[in-house]
Image 1 (spheres, rainbow, N blue to C red):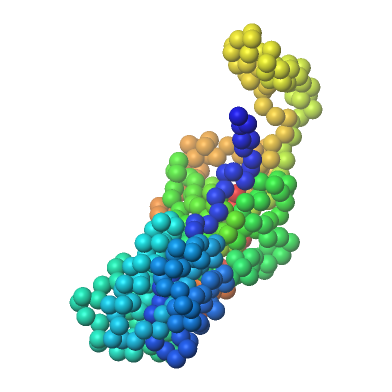
Image 2 (image 1 turned 120 degrees about the vertical axis):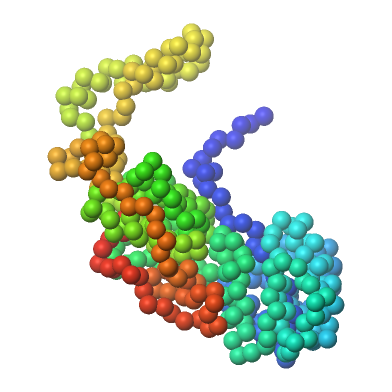
Length: 372
């Protein structure tokens, strides 16, 4: 049996399966449902009022088994809540078998006609028909779907918009392709923040981001007061924020020629040991350990520019911390508007009735935000 060879892209996983949405819209020609479909970049919209298929037929025929968001709309009026619930439950069973999330929306001319027995289940919205109904539904979807699921709702142009003001010489790079770029490439990843950053080892912030190609881990080392701005900025990240994250400039540190010459024979020996695995295997595992031990590390190393001192040497931040020269700021809650305004933040809060662009970051835009 052939063994799968692991590649760089195996460490990334793409978006989760797109959700299914059932929406009952009694308006003429189902205008609210059609407007909602227009807001979703990749959607399969099926109107039950325009097809002879029932919800059960759609599931049986695998019509909804698509990579796009499946939006099934109905035009039943306020008096048919029982029939709406029946259709929703049928579609929900199909969504469960498909392994995707399912949400329901019930647009009504008179919300007062909702009774206690009209139970659609979880992830449901009852909303009155109005001028901005489709927009309100679209915003609501971001509150009930997971961050990674909301990637299906965001247009590609928004997920590729880099910060060309602070980093004019940087280019866009998908998350899954970062390992394929040179170490010194000036690239930006545009992604959604999946989790609130946390401090590890007392000096490093770590968090996960995702775009439409996959998921990646980001981290930032505290490097003294000069990095305080970036530290505070990263701490304020919230799940669902869209951010353009530049990769920190990297520099290559090479050994002094004298050191390289001294280590060369040992490296050559190690290359022989580790390059003839079938021979070593017969001799014993001990020789393999010797090969690893005498390799003595690479002759050069790529490190973040901020980790190199004026003499071209790599800074030992652990030693700096032990000497008391580094102060770590504890995590504090900051009120950040959780798609997005020009700074990559959500353009509304969950309590807003209408979309509104909020004032920007509380930080100075002139400061650079760089990560590795």
